Image (cartoon, rainbow, N blue to C red; front, top):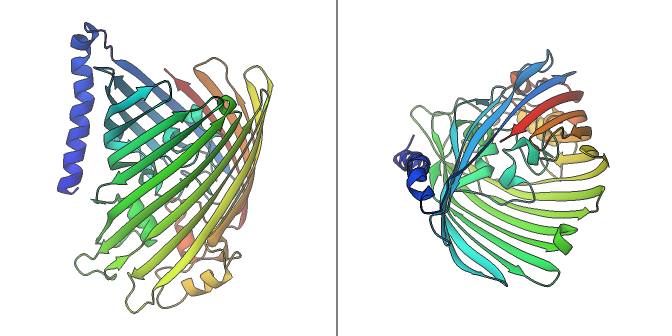
Length: 410
C-alpha cells in the first residue's frame, strides 16, 4: 500500500471512529448519530462457466454486509462513512474496506435548490445505480446489468468510489429538477484485482496507477421521477510502472466513457434503458506492440411489473461488445493467439449477451427475497478469476445462470 493510500485509509478509519465517539456529545446538541446497515446472502448455480465461486456445483460465495454512519453537527456540515465486506468468488474474499468516508459542506440551500462539496473517499455518480450498488435492496436484480455496471472483471471498486473531491448542485423547477455532479480523483495505485483486469494477467510485478480521473453527471427528473434522464462522462488515465524482471514495459491506458440513461415510471410499471460507450486506448505494456484503440459498447433494457403488494417481476436484455468493430470476437481471438499476447482467448471472451427473468418479494420493509434466471451467450463480463480455463481459450459460449438472494436492511 502506498503512502497516499495509507493516509486515506487512516483518515477514513479516524472519521468512522470519530462518528461513534462524538455521538453522545452531539446527541445532547440535538445532532444524533444515524446508524444503518445491510446484509445479503446469495446462491448461484450455472450450467457452464463459474460465476462467483464454483457455481457449476452450486455456490454460496456471494455475501455482502455493511454498516454506515451519518452525522450532521451543523445545518451546513455533515460526516458520512460506510464500511463494507464483500465475498464474491475469487474476486473478493470478504476483507472489510472503506466504501466511502467524506465530509459534506453545504454551500447553498434554498427553495430554488442546493449545492455543496464533499472531500474524502466519495462515491462516483454513474447512471442510475452506481452510488447505491453495494446495497442489494437498491439494485434492479441480484446482478446488475453488466454492460453498464461491470462487476465480474475485478474493476468494481474502481468504478464505485475514489479518493478526492466531489461537487454537486440541484436546481428545482415547478415540475422538474436538474442535478449536476462533478468528481475529481487523486492519483493512486490501483488495487490488485483492478490491475489484473486492465492487464489481463495476475502475474505482472509492476504497479498500475491512476494518474487522473474526472466524472460529470447530469440528471433530469420530471413530475417527481415519472421520467428520469441522465448523461454521464468519465475520463480516466492510468499508467503502468514495471517492476523488477518484468515482462511488461511502461504503458498508458486512457479510458473515456459515456453513459446515457432513461427511466419511465408508473404506479405498477417501470421501463429503464441505459447505454455505455467506452474508448479504451493502449500504449506500451507489451514490447514492440503498436499503439491501439478500441471502442466498447453495451446497453440494457429492463421492464419491471409490480403485480401485487410487495411483489415484482422483471425482464431484461443486456448486450456488450469489447470491440464494436469485431462483434463476434473472431479477430480479437486470433490476435490473442499471437506472439504479442499474454494468453489465448476464445471468441466468446469478447462479447456477452443475456436475457434475464427475475422476481422479487419484499416480505417486510427490511426483508427482500429474489430469484432470477440468466440465459447467456458469451463470457466477456464473466469473472476470469473463477475461470482460469479462459486463459487457455476454454469456457463455454452458451450457458445459463440461476440465482437466489435474501437481503436485510436495518
